[in-house]
Structure formats: C-alpha cells, structure tokens
Length: 231
Image (cartoon, one colour):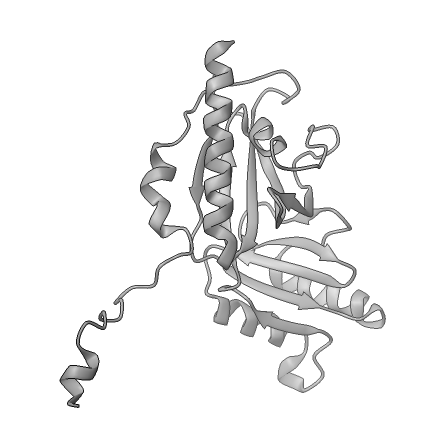
C-alpha cells in the first residue's frame, strides 16, 4: 500500500484554529433580537487557573493583584473591569481571563509574578485556555433566557454585576458571570428590575459541551421570543 493510498480521503489540517462553537456562528448571529436577547461566542480567550494553599493565599493575592491590576475576588464574585478579570471558582481556586493576551504569555507572567523565577512560586499556575468555551448573552430578557435552564436566583439584587457562580444549565455544568449592565441603550430594551440597563452574562462551559449549551440557549431564546411576541 502506497503512502498516497493511505492518505487518500484524509482531510488536510486546518490552517487556522476553530473555536468550540464556530460551526454555530451563523445561527448565533441570526438568533434573537436586541428587544429580547443576543448570543455570541467569545473565542480564544486566554484562561489561566491559579490555585493556592491557605498558608500562601495572602502572599499570592498580593503578588497576583500587583501583576493583574485587580485583587483576587471573594467567594461568589469576580474582579477586574475589563482585561484581565478574575473569577472565584472555589477556596484557593481562581480563573484569570484575558482577551488581550495569550494563555502562554498570561501564565508565564503570572508565574513569574508569584515568584517562579526565583524558584519559590507561591501557587500553581496552569494555562487552561483550551479547556472552556465562553458564550456571551445580553439583552433585556437575557436573565429570563438563563432562568429557563438554571436554578440560580438571577435577580440583580441577588446576582448583580460582578457575581460569578458555578451551576447547571440544562444539566450541563457551567460558570455564569454577570459582567455588568449596559446603560447605553437610551432606554431601549429596559425592563423592571434591571436598574435602567440591559444585563450582560458570560457563560463558561467545557469545550466539549459548547455545542450542547449553545443549542439549548438558542432554544430558550426562541421560546423567549415567542413569549415576548405574545405580550
């Protein structure tokens, strides 16, 4: 058997990387509306896990904060107003997310900041950028869309901007980050309880479940569109 025969029909490798939900890009673009909710993928974000022991946390928090420009968050919270931002995932466990850096660069910088270059790093730093997909859901009914598959109380008085929690959506483990409230819509799309703006959520999910999550969110958006049309 020749090499040509063995490789016949084998697709050529892709020149460019593909994000976990890239195959749904057209559907995401067409789904929903500014009057209800809009969904998109935020591809190729740098994601770095930081884990520290109790006896290292105070030192790690100080050194990491100096490097990142924001403090490590308390339980159930996120810190950072842009890039990077940090999510609390559990005791001594944080996820640093940055859309302006590479995972390799971010992890190397954080490792050095924590003392790695001196052989005394006070924490574990791992690049996990390929581990999770990130979807962004925004709109006046974004909270209602999430509520169709999520058991959390998402009311802004309970889960306001800066909140982060790991939970379930449609039987899939996800992290939900309420990134903020968009107040630039001049009243368009505002609804009671949203404090004069439109909520924005980022949903983090294992890359292998991105297709399932995106499709279930699309189904919830279609349902919400139908209910909004009847009101």
